[in-house]
Image (cartoon, rainbow, N blue to C red; front, side):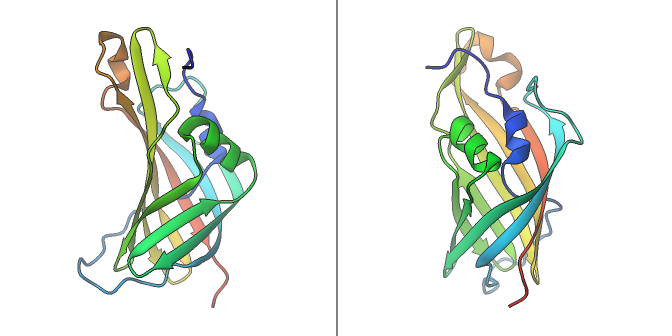
Length: 170
């Protein structure tokens, strides 16, 4: 078990998201499959990560989305973002669903970290919408704690990145 807080600033070199647009529930899912080039911008640092710089950006992140009906996966391609996700979350493939033009994907973190007597993992959730070939939304990084008194600000925290991705027109 690690004894130090993970460096979520690496996550800026990580995945996909920007403005979440509402989907119409029950709509046929859009065809989200494709190879996207994604840019990220760090926003709120709700989990008080010491290496998170609000406004810091990363660009050129490759993400391949595959789809089977309403089931989708987003595989972050080799590079710094993938390495950061593997270290902090224990994986780089988001899984989830598409409803209308709305995508909801998750990686449940598996590496355990500690802060004093607090043990925790970090989950990453993509909340995004697809408009034509433009994918935009947010990635939320949330600590899942054991509830120990030392968890403090990690309890219920979320740090957010905006994401904007594009795929070549089909």
